[in-house]
Each structure stands twice: as C-alpha cells, then as structure tokens.
Image 1 (cartoon, protein in one colour):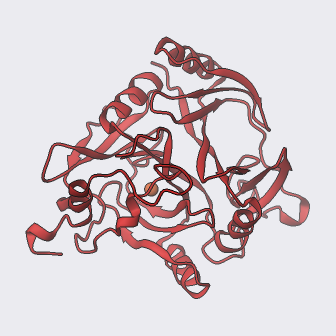
Image 2: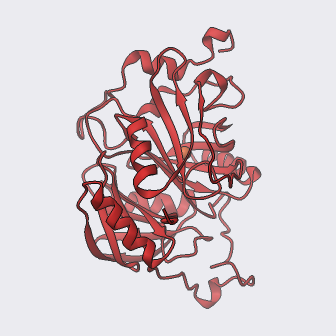
Length: 338
Ligand SMILES: [Fe+2]
C-alpha cells in the first residue's frame, strides 16, 4: 500500500456556546481566530502551516464533527477513498472550506473523517509575519500557547477492531495498546501516520453512543512551556483535570483541561520519535505505567467521560462498567503503590 495519510490537519468540534468556546481558545489556550463562515469559527495555533486547525461549530452538545487528515498526494486521496469504499463504507466528495475537494465519510465505529490533499496555507499579514522564513507567523505572546494541533483521541466499544480497520484500510501504524491487568480487555490504543506515538488514539467506550471523542490535543515545544501553561491555567481559575505528568505509552508530558462546552483538551510535548516501518505494537498493562510513567498518581474518574455524553444532553452517568473503571483508576493498588 502506498502511504495514504500524512498528518492530522484539523479537528472540527461542536459546542452549545460558540462564543464562549472561541473566547476560551483565544484567551486561555492561545489560538487565533482566522475566519467565520456559515456559523463556524476557524482557528489556528501560531505554528500551524495551513489556514486553520480547529473549527468551532454550533451544536446542542460537545461532539466531534469531523477529524481531518491531509493525504500524502493527490493520488493517495483517490486511493484512500477507494479503499474506504472497498471496505463497505460509502462517503461523499465535498468542497471543503479552504481544502477544496475532500472525501468525507463516517467510519465503522461512527467517527466522521475528512481526507484532503488540496489545502490553503496560512499567509500571515505583514505585522504578524515571522522574521524566520519557515514559520507561518510570529510565536504567540500568550504563555504556553501551543505551536500546533497534535492528535485526537476517540472512543469506541471495540478498541481492537477499531485499530484493525484503520490500519488495514488507511495504513495507520499501530504503536501500542493497553490491556487491563485483571482481564483481557483492550482499553486504549495508539495509531500514527508520523514519527510520534499517535495522531489518532482510541479509548474503550462502554456506552452505546457511537462516534464519540475523548479529547483532542495541542503540541507545545517544551516541557517548560507546558508547565508555564499549567501555572497560568491555575492562576486563571481553569481546573486541570489530570497532569502534568508523563504517559508511559509515547512518553509525552501531558496535561488535560476542559473547554467551556466540557470537551476535554490536552497539551502535549516530548515523547519518542519512532520511524520503524514494521514496528510491532507492545501490549502494556496499566500497572506498568501505560498512562502514568511514574506509576504513582491515579487518573481521575472524570477522564473516562467522552463526548457527547453517553445518553444525551442530560446524561451524567457513563457506560464504562465499574470494574473496568476501578482497574483503570487504581492500577498500582495491588503493587502497594497507590
Ligand atoms: Fe491524548
């Protein structure tokens, strides 16, 4: 198979209060607004090369409207669409905002995906242009502002089947997975189109609501910037849901917080760079520090929430069974470490 996909290019989310979310992304995350079109707000990080990387759209609930990958060539886009349809999924060709002809489909587990080759690159106005030729614009002056979009992590009822489909059909590399210590249940896997552990993650979803998102993530260049962002968030009354800490899988430093819709966003930095074309994914146990390299802090239960809520706008209960939650949240207990 030719290399089909090159990288995650944008994430489109819905939120009940577009203005509140946009204001949060501007002032607390450090994104800039680049355009408004059909009720959607197009935003970007200072280091994103294309016109936008985040689309904030109106909706009743926080949802993943689509996740978009740029293909490796025009031919790869045609090939990817053919492969999706050969796998029994019928998508549609659309004319996407500043991406031109794009193929959009709903994957077998309910996640909307957009594939495109054409793209409009960011052109900074004179006063925002960097003195460095490779930078799309000046570095942000906001503390801890991310350089670029990094990855998206979705939720599904069958993590292993999800991995198989995205590897077989679209050529993602399967990098690692987590299986519970107590039972042979896959709860997390990472897939990538590049040298990092993942630009697509997948967590177990115990609900019957298909196509949910757990979080999406931005990249900062250094751990120092991530720690400054953590400091700034705390001082401005933005709760940090989990972290700063280091994932065992991928070895990235991370922190999670929520945007006003309640959707979870993440800051990420560091981690390994893996170019091995025939990498064989290892299976981690939570007790080995798959989520927390130091094997000491327990993940808050709220991290098992995905979006939209499992049973609609008024739902408060997630579908993840208690024993799975317990195994995820207290992985070090049996070692006497937590
Ligand atoms: Fe993540």
